[in-house]
Length: 138
Image (cartoon, one colour):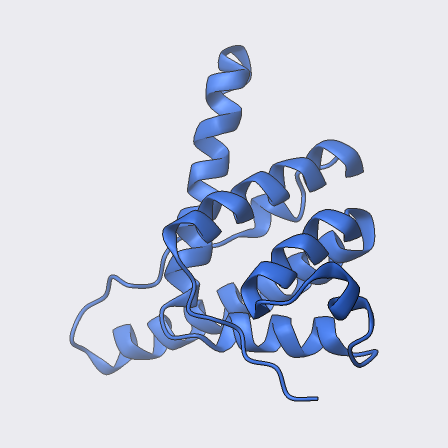
């Protein structure tokens, strides 16, 4: 079955930040969360700057893919609930989809135009939430 992930919205960025926080809390580590590179939307006009931007984008996408896969293993129900919303199906229908549905969804999420900035902003929102919750650790 072919599925289509809807365009990501602001509320998805908030959901992603919450999922990343829950993942970090449960797994007891921020190591994957802290791997998120800064946004790649800035850059100059030179070839080196363009190549650097491409490298940064590839790094963000690879990190996002890895993080989503790890989150799926640790907080499967929460991530699956978000995935259901992204593809517009009930949880029951989702559970009856192809065995590789998560990979299909993750591939479509990270391939959306501008996802690298969406993901970087989501991680910055998470860091701000963490700093507000634990001001002495910042």
